[in-house]
Image (cartoon, rainbow, N blue to C red):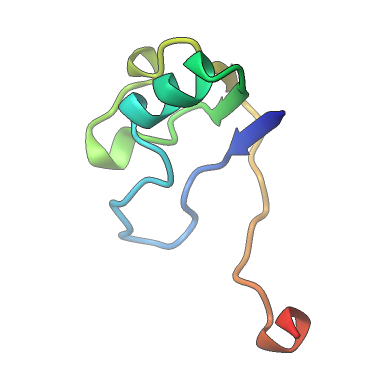
Length: 71
């Protein structure tokens, strides 16, 4: 399985969707983890901390789901 983790797009948001320790756990479990470059910077996790994960320079356009689409 390939997991892509994009940067947070909301202004001022400091949380990250995946911390380095969790990325390492996923990689050890056999997953292919792709992290958008700079994804962890707001939470003081540099790209080098995501050991085993592939770095991508692609910006993802990820938005919150529309509640009507969840039904």
